[in-house]
Image 1 (cartoon, rainbow, N blue to C red):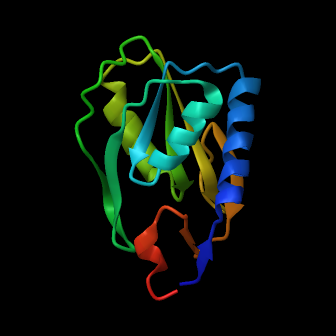
Image 2: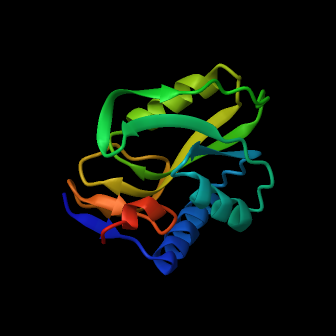
Amino acid sequence: MDKVFVQWLTITSYAKQVAKQVEERGFKPDAIIPILRGGMVPAAILSDLLNVKTIYPVHCSSYDGMVKRKYPVVDPFTYNIDGKEVLIVDDVLDTGDTFEAVQASIKRNNPKRMMCASLMVRENSARPSFWSDIAKEGAWIVFPWELNEFKGD
């Protein structure tokens, strides 16, 4: 599998594009919900760009190493988001399974509205509400915060 290394300046550009889309749609999230671990850094950047101070992380595991699980595993989401507008953030949308599983879990907490953002999407994937770039199918995307991915490269 080919690895594609995404640089910090590219991440910044992607995040600014996503933030601009959020603002242009008039969406004003009360909280940002990063999908751990990949969505944490993009969520922190978007939190700054959108001036959203509240971040409620959710852990969802779709991969075991580089092997995709049959079904994503979502840890219980215990934050009070009743009546709030939330932006769910991840680094890459592959199939949409992770976002679907997280949305199903979060929906139990009665948010007013949920929207999703991802820095990158796969060529043949579903599309979140907000995204910046399309990643080639089959390429393993490596972000600067994924230090273990740099071993041997």
